[in-house]
Image 1 (cartoon, rainbow, N blue to C red):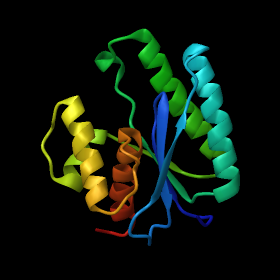
Image 2: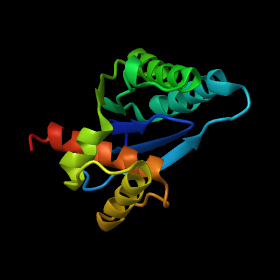
Image 3: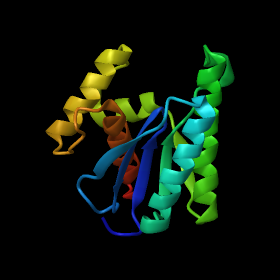
Image 4: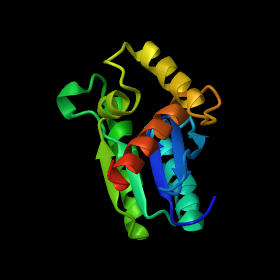
Length: 162
């Protein structure tokens, strides 16, 4: 991987990431498995460390993240705190290296990249993995990596004007 690419994140207890140049056909993907012990604060601290190391090494020119659900759509306080905490960590980490951050709704990404209508959660996860595999993206059967890869593909299309 070379510095100066596009980084896409699927923020969660497993944070999937996809990275590559906007000129690449497909991104490199992987994930950071954040700790369970310590709750959402421990996950935020772990993301700060993993993401900080990544940003220092690769200096992306743009970061795109999955937009957090609005407050009225949240169903559990701990889930909401984790979503907003991880979102904040991503944005602050990017701020320190002057990397702009764009947030996009995952349903928009899925519809515009795969052409699929809204699906139930498990069906959507499997459809995203299958789509990535068909595109030659190694997502290790992990929907977090697949979600990040779709977000990367979506934003690369935006950056390249198509």
